[in-house]
Image 1: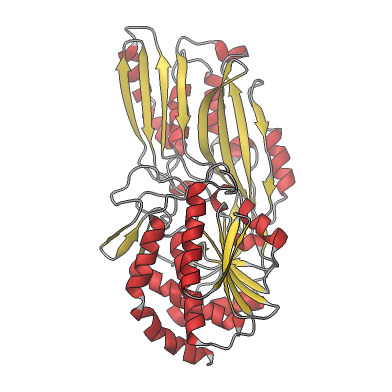
Image 2: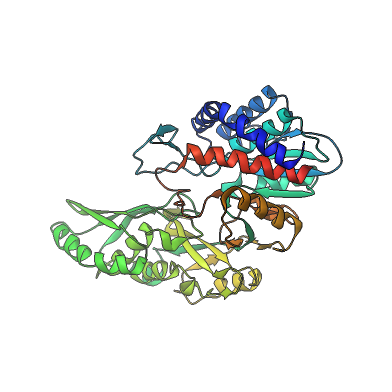
Length: 481
């Protein structure tokens, strides 16, 4: 069977399994596989392990060889030989969040499959599983093994695949369906910047209005869609405080810089004012596509005359400038463009008997930039004297030669399927492509399709899911034969 014959085979094979493929994804979406702390021998918690078991059961039913690598990742495999053609996906998801109009655990409506992970990355996981099935059932003569690796910690640090490749071999060729088409050959580096700002020391103590609660965001790698604070105010001044905060709302929308909406809700009770801010979530690598609720909250509070810690709140706001200016880490290059910065989470905590606001900023720095130099600039940026900054680790950028055999092969398959001659691109997000020697990211988002990963109403069309099965089947056929 040659490549043309395999393509003809898929024209019948995929349509006859269309409903089965959709049903498989729907069942996987029902598993709320947000990673947690380890539970026994399950490094990423019970639900991620449940998703692993679901995948392994489906692969075994299809007659594939399978392996669970210490609970960190699993794989299915067909074929034989010393060399491997590999695809890598993940089944862990970010929290569901708010604002959904459809069932976040799976709903088919209007030709779309809705659900957290439908695009990032359970849809591609199911597509790759069925790509292996298509190869196996076609009887195609494989020169290499074809292996599909599924991780469980992609959204929270890549510990899954780091462990996996400590005990399993690197592939001859590999790609990750966790970005956009036509192909991604370079990914920015990343780092988290942790800012700890005490409210009970030095100048922070001054102020008539005390911050009792302050929180926002779910993950560092998501633009915060919600934030809230509770202020203690002198009885009788609640309405005055609300009026002052409302006056600063428009300035906050400008400071955040996103496309909107950024909405404010104020609730006054005797001696307190609660402020709730609703923004627009987006992936941390594209903060300009979201509206950060934490930044909006910190901005309006910093402008309230008489609030404690106004200088700290101003720093938190300025540090959230989406291109890194506030942390003194602005950078750009000719391959991947500008550095991005996202204020992902903020919490008021009690530490050693004192109150601190702890913020986590997620930055994606250009491919040609020096990550260690960016780190040092963040550690030494100008700030109030009580504020401390930490950078726990720096993830290196990734680059694969766009003239490589892998890139040219995957581009050819995509272009033959779509007629789209767009060039390969770079991204700010981090995919499993960076853990493969010479690896790339390949789909699943088609040009012109909204990028809804990490957002409410995340979805993939049924037809696009079938397209993914086809293009990944063809790609793995070429790489394996």
